[in-house]
Image 1 (tube, rainbow, N blue to C red):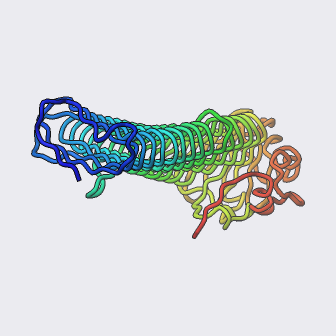
Image 2: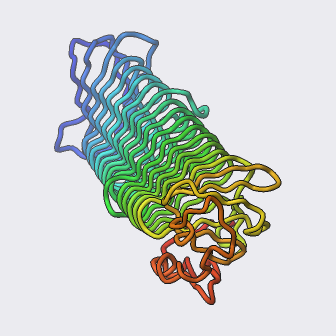
Image 3: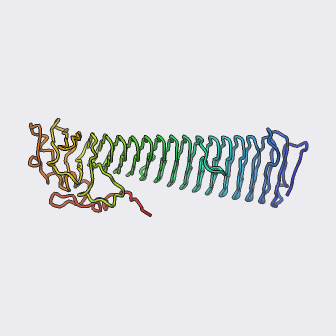
Amino acid sequence: MKSLKENNKKQFNLLPSNHVESDHLEFDFPFYNLVVNGTSGNDIISRDGPTDNDQYQIYGFDGNDILTGGYKDDEIYGGNGNDQLWGGNGYDTLEGNNGADNIYGDAGDDKIDGGDNNDVLFGGDGNDEINGGAGNDIISGDFKRSGASDFNDSIHGGTGDDQINSSLGDDFVWGDDGIDIIDTGDGNDTVDGGNGTDLVEAGSGNDTVTGGNDNAQDFLFGEAGNDNLSGGAGDDALDGGDDDDTLDGGAGSDQLFGGYGDDIVNGGNDDDFVFGHRGSDHVNGGDGDDLINFTDWTNPEDFDFANLDIGDGSDDVFDGGNGDDLFFFDKRTRFDDYTFTKVSSTEFKSVHKRTGETDRFLNIEGVVFRGIVYSVETFLQKRGASFAADDTDPTSLLSQAMGGFGAGVSDGTVTSWEDYKSQHSLFTVSNS
């Protein structure tokens, strides 16, 4: 091990550049802006001294190096090789360059760039800026040696398939290119999954999440908090989770689950499958032939279309938008349990005779009770103010609405979830 004390230089080279060796250097220089150059071997370079105002630039060059900064604002560059970089205190700049690097920002507002290859990056305390660069990276914004910390980080996954955990704080996260898994934890976070199929778990807080503008399928989970989820292009799956959420499927055949709370759910273009769940929700199917349902669901594979739950005592608004749309009522109720009243040629409302629950339906072409589809198109063209089951046609809608989905239909009865799922790429919930 080499240990160097005060001299009259502000730059130190461990060895000539043509000498390959593994060196261990601990330095204690009182100089500001000291430059330390490593070798083409495996170097260990660290700051060893009391807290001071010194600032260092450390270059590892080739080899698998361990480079540690001091107490101020250091610049540390790993170079080629699989390096370990530790920023220490201060506002540090850490770049892994080539190689599979492990980088720890430690305390302070750090700038971290993993560079090429598959890196592991930890921001630590402070409001950090982290860029994974090329490769399949693992990124954690707030992890430190003693646990998690509460700071606001900016994280770019870069190219490659990344795993990103921003943990606490109000963070900005970009998945960029690749298949990314993003978990933002607590805080009011802003997430853009970028190109590729992304899985985003927003955690607690009021989060804004978009899956990106590409055609890949994204899976967005708002979890707790008042979240804003946008699927963008592609066949996406969005789950608002708890509290009052806004979901927009955008283009593509999307599956939207409002979750608990008073949600606004927009299916967007194409044929969507929409769950409102509990709360006073406003649902708009948008363009396309949509299926709209409110249910207490835990695992979609557990349900048949003829047995879907719907309705929870809240007053809701459902707008099917363009296309032929179906609305599923509670499996425990019958058509005769409701009073249906015409509002206009495109709108009707229902009142539950026992609970008084009142819901509005716009641009809905059919309602489903216990697997039976009742067309309301004929009724809406009549002048009468109310209608009963005899005023509906239980089969006329099937070739229109259900034909667009490809779900199994027989004698006016919607069959199973499996029939629907076999023709649509619905996401699955694993119990493992």
